[in-house]
Amino acid sequence: MTKLIMLMCGLVLVCTSGCTTLDCLNGIESVPASRVPREILGRRRSEMMQISMQRLRQTPPSVYQLAPNDVLGIYVENVLGNADAPPPVHFPQDSSKPPSLGFPVPVREDGTLALPLVEPIHVSGLTLAQATDAIRRAYTVKRRILPEGKDRIIVTLQRPREYRVLVVREESGGGGGGGGASGGGATTASNKRGTGATVFLPAYENDLLTALTKTGGLPGLDAANEVLIIRGNFQDGAERDTLVARLKSCKEPCECEAEFPNASVTKVPLRFFPDQVPNFKQEDIILETGDIVMVQSRDREQFYMGGVLRGVYQIPRDYDLNILQAISLANGQVAAGGSGLMGTGGGGATSGVFPPSRAIVIRKLCNGSTVAIRVNTQQALTDQSQQLLIQPEDLIIMQYTLTEEFGNVMVRAFNINYILGGSGTRL
Image (cartoon, rainbow, N blue to C red; front, side):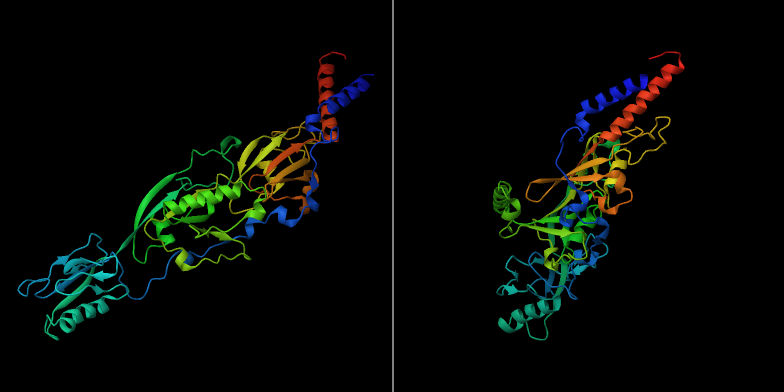
């Protein structure tokens, strides 16, 4: 009689706990993982390759070429400087650069030099030797101010042009990772660096690699797999915001995607799949004054646990995380840890004799809709087709089956009866 009462109580408990039992209720309509198209399942992150660092820097010319904002040291005897006085010497603050001779003369915005007694001399794109010849012709051939062949003209590079670039970095300041979950099972933003720095890059060093190196080095494990280079002025930014807002309001984003006019944002991937080699060019990573380099944090690449388990966890950057590993990361069980005779399940957030084996993964699609994918975690232990790879913003709902809940109820009832019986109490 006692066993019959226990059995009936177990059935009642199981069928009244419908919030976690899909066998009693219809629950979420889902598709088995083995029947989901590969495009929805996602690709393995372990297949990605690191971008070559050589593609993030520019190749400088063999000889320095002049351009606006260069400052030259120029000495023209009896015009810029007297014959009885030596040329002035300028020692740069950077000890790695040689000193220069002559008076400082900047290259103007139109690429010309303004020197006394002669017309503006165009030097943009010329080397120092070519600029010297151009100045000599201006004083000896065009105006005949100096005797040809007896002039004393010295041209040196006193200060190379620089480009002012703003670098904004969101990843954490430490050398640690971003590859796992944060403490307590929830990802926080307290470790984000959130810093910005203005850097001055000399000519032929004004590239993405140099900007990153000067502001803390290459992005770490907690940074996104791409770096953004934002160009343009205020009006360009306003037009881009308007276009993005229009695309976001579209009911079918996949059909409404369009390239931005006069694209003001260049995306430079740091890791890529072998069949998707980035096709950006060298001029795309060359920075100009006013450009913004943005390193975004990976704190948006999370997955969520619901149902029996709870929490928010970050997806690793360089390796894959399948459904079984995600459950383990959330301190859940993917298999029973005991024989069931003593009613122990091996600990964890779902420590029962029979752990939940039904996982429903709610995955977002590019058109804004979602698809529910069903995985049997017990079968996934040996069936790779059910070892679904977790993608950003996945919601994993862990649920018991009818058999598992019934088994757990019966074991708990048996344990209670055993304890009470051992203490001399009869049901």
